[in-house]
Amino acid sequence: VCFDQIFNQAAKFRYMFGGKAVTPLVIRTMYGAGFRAASQHSQCLYPVFTHIPGLKVVLPSNAYEAKGLLTQAIRDDDPVIFFEHKAMYDEEMEVPDEPYAIPFGEANVTREGDDVTIVAFGRMVNFANQAADSLARHGITCTVVDPRTTSPLDTETILETVEETGRLVVVDEAHPRCGMAGDIAGLVAERAFDSLKAPIKLVTAPHAPVPFSPVLEDIYIPGVARIEEAVRAVVEHDRKVAAE
Image (tube, rainbow, N blue to C red):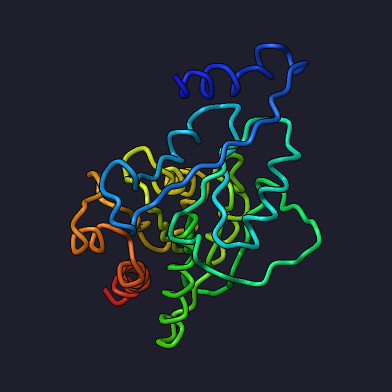
């Protein structure tokens, strides 16, 4: 019932009424694994909503972004699905008291490097930054891109950074099939293929329900170690090719 109202009504009113109708609606919802909540309460469903034209989909990676993006969502005349990772509710950081808004469709480059571009979503941005910190100590520097919104998506920032580094790793907690990781990989393969020095690597959850077992769930979630492994693989690939 709710999907029909969101997908077939709210998302389509502006289009169906020739731009004369607006739907200033914000739906806040939780997502993500890590709380031993098992299969039904740990899913990452933002790719499903991203697929629907007319919806705006938001994934903040920290409290500062959450405030600014939520302010923007409230001011927007289109329906916005605002995804909040459960694991981030306990995180703390300084946030300005005064009101501010972060525009949709403008990615944040959290750090710049020369070797690899890492595009990560939501909580995975924090993991990507941790991996980048570790890799920097071994001489590998990474550019980390936080898109902030999946719809609209800042494709230009992603493409520009890949053109600079020549390598891409995409980190997404959602499933690999029909997800944002594959979407970003397809974008780069189509529009920046000649810039690539190595195959694109995707770091995602497996295409399976989230397990209840703590041991299995920890393995299920894309972590810092897997990100580091993927980055090392793309860096070493073209070095091996050059050596041959």
